[in-house]
Each structure stands twice: as C-alpha cells, then as structure tokens.
Length: 156
Image 1 (tube, rainbow, N blue to C red):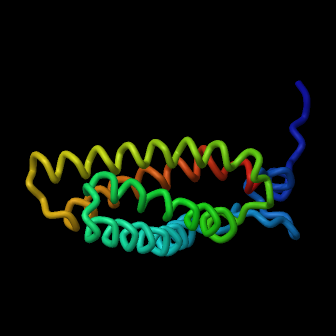
Image 2 (image 1 turned 60 degrees about the vertical axis):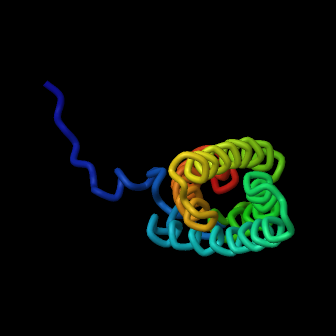
C-alpha cells in the first residue's frame, strides 16, 4: 500500500482556469451583474439611436416594419463598438467577432421585425409599445448570444 501525500490547497488553484492573471484585458474577473449592466447601458444607447431613426422614418411616412428595420441597422453599428470595447472588453480580434456579430444581428433583426409585425398586425399594439416589447425580447436573446458566441473568443 502506498502512502498518501498531503496536498496544499494552493496546489489546486495554481492552474485554475478561473484565476485572473495580472495584465489580461478580459472580463473573466468581472461579475455577471456588471457585465449585464454594461450590456444594458451600451444597448440602451444603441436602442435610442434605433428608435430615433425609426420614429423619424415612420413620421416621414415609411411603413413601420421598414422603419424599425432601418433603425435597427443604425443602432447595430453603435452597439458593436460599445459591446466590443466596453461590455465584453474585446482585445482587437474583430476578424472573429464581426462575422459572428453580423449573424447575431441578422437573427435579432428577424426576431425584432417578426415580433413587431405580430404585435402591430394581430395584437393591435401601438407602434411604440410593440417596439418596446420586441426590444425586450431581442435584448435577452442578444446578451446570451453575445456572451456565448460573439465576443467569447475576443475576451480570452
């Protein structure tokens, strides 16, 4: 029978993947709550731009689904910059993040337009209430996709 050797607790954490190393520019050490707050603030600015464009186009007579879709495009450009650099603290790997972001944005546009259309056409919601509801659903989906698929490689 071989003798068991005691192992110090520090030996277990010496190679831990969750340990933050000095000098890294990642969000590993950031709390989920901080990341969600930054996501909401960044997305809020992008959403304000989206809604401003949507309102201006709708007021000018454009069909509401087109107006919100074009507004979403404008907001998406601002959102990428804010999410990449502030929320997820990207390290400059745009070559991986941009294609994934574009796919996520296309999905978000489709979900936004679909929910917006259903709420306007069948549930008879007003323009702004429909957009608020669609935006809330898209925000939840976007956070999950951004964290797990879009910016995850940029923060490692």
